[in-house]
Every structure is written in C-alpha cells, then in structure tokens.
Amino acid sequence: MSALAITAQVAVIGAGAMGAGIAQVAAQAGHPVKLYDNRPGAAAQAIAGIDRQLGRLVDKGKLQGQARETIIGRLKPVETLAELADARLVVEAIVENLQVKQSLLRQLETLCADDCILASNTSSLSITSLAAGLERPHNVIGMHFFNPAPLMALVEIVSGLATDPALAHALYKTAKAWGKTPVHTRSTPGFIVNRVARPFYAESLRLLQEGAADCASLDALLRDAGGFRMGAFELTDLIGHDVNYAVTCSVFDAFYGDFRFQPSLVQKELVDAGRLGRKSGQGFYSYAEGAERPPASVLQSAAKVEHCVVEGHLGVMQPLLDRLRAAGVSVTERAGKGLLRVGDATLALSDGRLASQRAREDGLSNLVLLDLALDYATATRLAIGCAAGTCPAARDQAVALLQRAGLQVTAVADLPGLVVLRTVAMLANEAADAVLQGVGTAADIDLAMCAGVNYPCGPLAWAEHIGVDYTLRVLDNLQRSYGESRYRPSLLLRRSNANGGRLHD
Ligand code: NAI
Image (cartoon, rainbow, N blue to C red; front, side, top):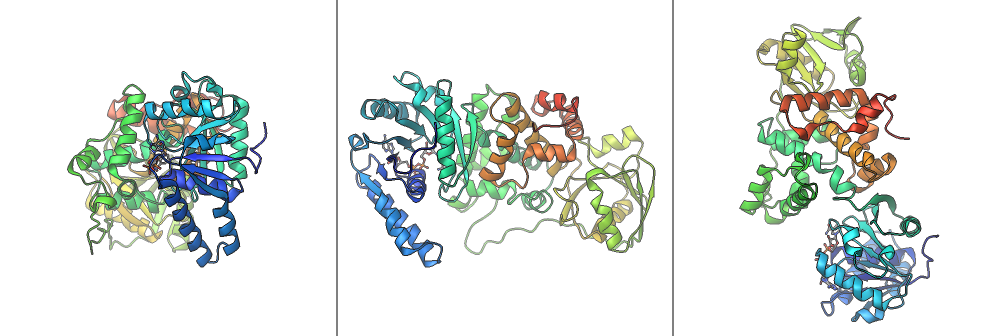
C-alpha cells in the first residue's frame, strides 16, 4: 500500500490542542481536511486559530500570504459526524477515554467506507482495546503526534494486535509525506517515547529524594554535561506535574507495578499541593512575577595544579587530556587502569558503584568519581562524588584540575552512578528492553527519542558509544548497590555484550 493520495479526504475529530494541530499538518501537506468537534462552533474556532498561527508565519516571512489562504481553504469545519462519510483517513483526537473513543470508532465504522483508515492520537490507551469488538479492527491504528503537532517531527505509528501491517506501512509513508518523522511501534504501554523517557524523570527525582544535590544543580548537570535541552525538574515543571505524574502512574500500572516505572513520592507531593509547575506558578521552581531561578552550585578551588598523571586509557573521558594539555597542564602517561592522579587525589569515571565502596574495594584513597558527559571535549560542567574520608585538600586539587580543563564542577552526594551516567544507563536499559520486546527497532527507538523529546543522542547509540559492557557494568553495580529490580539490566544488553557489543542491526 502506498501513502494516502494527496487529494484524499482527511477527517480530524476533536478540535482541541492536538486535533487542531493535526488538521493543520494534513492541510499543509495538501489534503482537504474536515474538522469535527462535538462542542458546537469549536471546529470553526480551531480553524480561526490555525489561521492566526499561519498569519504569524506570514508576518515572519516564513509563509506566503497566498499559501496561508490555500491552506485555510482546505480546512472545513463540520457540525455532524455524518459529514465525514467520504473520509479516507480519520484521525481522532478527542478526550482520552477508552469507552468514549470506542463508541466514536463504532459510529465511524457504520458511516465511513470499508477501507477507511481509523487512526487514534491516543497517548496512553491500547490500540488493541480500541479496535476490539469492531467489525473491521484491521483498519484501526495509532497515529501518535507530539505537542505541538505542527512543530514536533515525531509520529508514532502504533499497530494493535489486529492492525493490517500494510496499513501501518501506508500510514508511515503518509506521515513522511506530511513532513514528519514516523516510527513503527506496537501497542504496548507508553508506546516508545512515553515508556523509554520514564527514567529521565525517575532518576532525577530519586537523586533529589536521596539528597544528591538541589534541583538547579541536577538540571544544570543534565544540560551542561549530558547535552539534554532541559533538566528533569525544569522539564516536568513545563509539562505539568499532574500530566507527567499521571503518565508515570499509567505506565507503572500497565506493567503490573514493575519497579522500573515506580512513580515518585516527591512528585506526588507536588501534585497533592497543587504545585503543578509553570501553569500554577509553582513547581520545583517558582514562576511568580520577578522570581529568579536559583543558580547551580559550583565548587571553587584556589589550589595550583600544573601536573597530573594518567594511568592507562581513560576511555570516553580521554578528550579531557587534550583540554588539560591545551590549558598548559603537563600530563604524564603511564600504564594502569584508567585513573587520573593529581596531588593526593585519584580521579576516575564512575562505574555505578558508590565512591566509598569502590575506594575500599579497589584500595584507592582520596577517590573522586567523575560523572559521564555526552562529549568531554565540549562539556562545560561535570559532577563529582567523593568517597567518605576523602580529605578536603585532595578534593580541592581534583576540582582545580577540572577547572583547568574549563569545567565547572558541581559536587553531588556519594550516590551510585552520579547523575548523567545513571540517567543514560537507565534510558539505554529501557530502550534495550523495548527492542527485546519488539516494541520497535533499535533505529526507530533512537530516532523516536531524538525527534520526539529532543535527546542529544539515541539511548542505544549512546550505550554503544560508551560501551555496552560498561553500560551493563554500571547497571549491575546500581542493582547491587540498591538491591532493587528497578536497576536490573535488560537481557538484550547482556546478549549483545556477549556478542560484540552492537545494539543496532
Ligand atoms: P483537548 O481537551 O485540548 O481537546 C479535545 C477535544 O475533543 C475538545 O475540543 C472536545 O470538545 C473534543 N471532544 C471530546 N469528546 C468528543 C467526542 N465524543 N466527539 C467529538 N469531539 C469530542 O485534548 P488534547 O490535548 O487535544 O488531546 C486529545 C487527544 O490527544 C487525547 O487522546 C490525548 O491523550 C492525545 N494527546 C495529547 C497530547 C497533548 O500533549 N495534549 C499529546 C499527544 C496525544
């Protein structure tokens, strides 16, 4: 089956935030689009809103006035469902309620042609359940856009148990023709993005709960070292804690209480208090008039450091040496196990153990663990965690060395896997399990996380970059430290580690 012909009639049901956006996307691609909402007048209002949006693009010189008129001319508000009978593709974006959506689909089956595609924009309901009991369940499919639909590239094409694979391919091609980045996925809780992204929020929430550092510092680390657009606290403040917490609870329940998805008491308390984030004026941060975001904490050292010793290869941290040399620090290299020595301090990349545990097990004194950075050549900040008993002077020398490399140093409590490392390891773990369970291919899952939530790198590609063996070691150590199934490594990571460390085909 090929993509839907550009002349084919599209219908969008529900003229709220998502429906209006989807209608705009389809009309911009060239389709005639009918928009229906059961609130009288809502469809016409939504089209007027689209017109205003397009007007802003015209003002900015990004769209021609003529194109605006053509697009608006393709959008038709309708006041009855019966007027959608000639649609070749219907996308519903009505209230997120299984019974209401099922009843709508039943009506559409009786109204529309036998081969009309019935797509749902649901973000949490099972496509298999939506299709159950219909005459033609093979025509039902998920077409999950992200908010705002005209701007966000990703569309998850979600197949239920009965969905015709040819239809999934046709809709995939259609989404591409609409200028989107589609991925195939199966009807499983959270599909790809809302499942794989859970650890991004969960690990920061847990670090906060365990006193790792304050919100501003943890957010800054995910941005400045991890390369993420936003940290978890500023992002959940933006999404709204009610919405983000509800998604976590729904995925947790759908997986029968698997602790990997356990909701956070810290976030629940915000919801209970009505501190929903930006929209309520207060979340982790205050959005009151004139409120300023607290700064991330930074360690300052006045110690003079001119020389350091590298023992062995530093792995992904190796670019740090170039930064040190460029800053005039002399670097002596000798054989060893990937340690960096300065004065009395020993620095090493975290491997998911507590610094205190590793210092004891490996016989290292004054151990300062370093966090993962997306790119050590360009990162501007790095977390450190010190073993108990590390003397202040040694820590000062470690900080001074990192300062010489141009890094801001943020101290976090001695917790396993520090901040970026445990977040990335857990994202990769979830992505690996999703591949293992056939939710999507490795390529599609990485693509979805980049196009849907702007990750700087797909979690699986990231695990390959730092090494699947290393990712697995970090997870094993996290699991040992916490003694919780939450950190159990995916079987896929174990299997690929035993098989050359490749996660992509
Ligand atoms: P919304 O509340 O802004 O809009 C829903 C619209 O549907 C309203 O205008 C309402 O009058 C209409 N409606 C409700 N029941 C109807 C019915 N039986 N027949 C016709 N129209 C009906 O909601 P929003 O945010 O646009 O979400 C719509 C769907 O998209 C939901 O399934 C949601 O889970 C999903 N979604 C939402 C995203 C978001 O960020 N808001 C992102 C991706 C998916």
